[in-house]
Every structure is written in structure tokens, then in C-alpha cells.
Length: 450
Image (tube, rainbow, N blue to C red; front, side):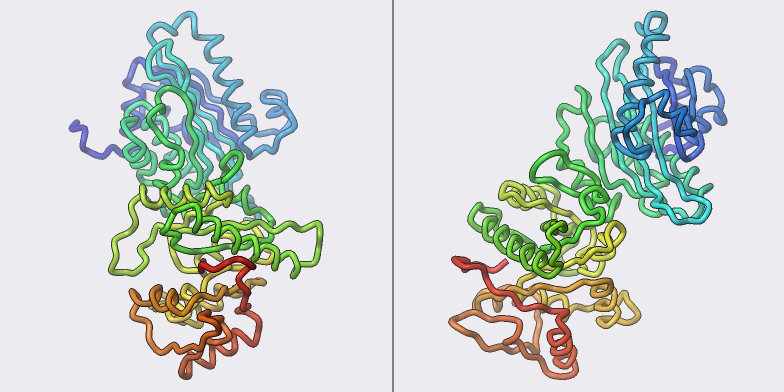
């Protein structure tokens, strides 16, 4: 079969079964045993499958992998990998180690429950050797399942698992080819992969930030999270039940001075939200938001190196970053609403606010009104920072936005100084009067717009 021909799940599993050097174990919890099932139904499984197990009962799972961690978590996944790998080598290392590339596939998943009230997500992992007797390599994924039924979610996990094992043995040339194989027939419509980590000599040339950015640029996820400090985690762990300040922007300069400016404005917005909630126990989180969509529909999407340059500058300044697939503010709000019902505030410069209000929402039946309804529901407001008159004009120039007028004070323009002819002017005045748009002041010693 030509190497360029796409293999479906059946042929991927069969190819692995016909490979006499690949041999391993499967431990699957929460979504059936759909991954190992593929290797049995295509034939020749005895050449690939050493063991399958599903420690579904919590007491059984604790006995095998230890207590003390959530059952659907990275910690549990790591414990499963360690246990299954050690057992595989202990039982088969002496007899097969010289001619076998061992692997252990594990997953711990919360598939849709009977009432449909749970968060359908999971962790998937693979430990494998690239050559007999070689050091182990790990791939860890966090997934969100989009199918509407438990049966379909199980099926999707089965396809993803086969893809992962096949990609590890056949598509390690680069992040892009690995991800392309990983996502075949399942990503986008059925499974979202919003986190990937890897370790081992097989991945020495890979970059974690690049891999995360590719998850967005290739449509694997709606958003991924980059941490300024500590370990990077899936968005659910960064956002869960938190009050949030989201600061969207292009952040094109990338120099330390501008990054400090952005950080000061974000911190000012966090302080404002803290005053709003008035509860010392609630500590709002602030995140910069970038998008992999083009600024204008006629523009090409940004390249991954450019995204990473801008993300890196913000991380260096101490800010955490969410990279979104889509650029609309209501889509950003929809993503974070998966994980928190606490107050959400957008911190934007005047030009971005104008672009959002003046945008074309032809994909929505209700156009601008529907976009605003989606954005501002569930305790959402927009903090709007002033900009200099010159910078505001420069930022709006590429978008051919007309109809807005403003006055200035000492060269600066605030949201209260904007005007637009009716009927849009009436809507803008309503948003201001209703406190959906909250004019902010530039922090002291601050002169550059966000």
C-alpha cells in the first residue's frame, strides 16, 4: 500500500497486528474497552495484545493504581502508566525484550452518564519503545468528547486510541504529521484534544508550545492554555470555577516594554473585578487571549511561529495565555462558560471594542444583537480602556470602520467620548448606561494602549 494513502482505523489496527515487533497492554477505564476491541476484531490480535483490563470499580482501581487522586485526572493516568508498564516488563522483558517494542496504552474517561449531567472528558496516554530494549517514551492527551451518546463516545475513544498507537510507531517525523494521523476520522466533530504532553528521546526535537499551537491551527481544539509559571494544564484546570478577566488582543509588538504595559492593564482589570465581587476569598484569574484566526477575513491566518513569538512575550512578562481557534468575543466567552459560572470580564482597548460592535456577524441569524446576547449573558461585562486619538485612528484604519466620532481629553479618548449615528448609537449608549461596557482609567504612569 503506498505510504501516502490514508489508512482507516481497521487498517491501522491490522497493520499493528501484522507488525511482529509491537506488543503491549491495554488498561481502559470509563468508556468500555473500545481501543483493544479494534485489535481483536481485525484479526491477528495475539501478535499485539498482551493483556487488556478495565478496572471500572473504584475500589479495584485504587487497589491497582493507588488511592488519593481523582479518577479522571492526569495523576491517575500517570499511575496507570507506571503500573502497567512495570508489569509488562516484569512479565515479558526477559522472554521478548530483545526483539519486541513494548507499549502500554491507558485511558481514564468520564463518558456521558445516564442522565447526561457530567462533563464528558478524559485522559489518554501511551508509553512505548521505538526499538527493542530502548528507553520508554510517553504521550499524554486530555480530550473532550462531543458525541451526544455514551455509545458514540466510546466508539470515538476507540478510534483515537488506535490512531495514537499507530502514530507513535509510524508518524514520529514531526509534530504536524503525528497530529494529522492522531486526529484522522475523529477530531473536530467527535473529539477535541486541548492538551498534549510528551517526553522521552523520541521527542527530543519537538517543542511543547509548538505542539499546543498546532492543536489550534489544525482545528483539534477551541482553546489551549499556556502557563507563565508552573506546569501547563488543559483549559478546564486553568479556568474551573474561577472569576476571570480575559484580555484579548493581537499583541504584535512583542518587546518587553509593551508586554509590561499589557500586564499592568490586565492587573488593573483584575483589581477592578476583585472590587466588584467584594469577597476576599475569591481571587480572579487574568489571562491574555490570542486567536489563530486572521484579523480580517481577507487576511491569511497567522503562522505558528508568529503566534509563539507573541505568546512567548506575554509569558515572559508573567501573564498566562489562552490561544483560541476563533476570534469573536462571544466564542471566547462560550469556551470559558464550559468551566465556570463565576463573573467574567473582558479587558479591551477602545479599538477592539469598536471592532466588536461594528463587526459583521453574518453567521448568526440575529447578527450583532445575537452576538451581544451570547457575549453578555451570565454576568459578563467589558472593561474598556482609553487610547490616544492617534493610536485609535491607526488601529481602526485597516478595518474601514466608519460612522464613529469622538472627542478627546489631553489627546486621550475614553468610551464615554465615543458617538455613533443611530440606530447603532442608541445601542452603544444602552450598553454604557446598563454597565455592560465599563469605562476604565489607564493606570498611573501608563501611556500606551492595550
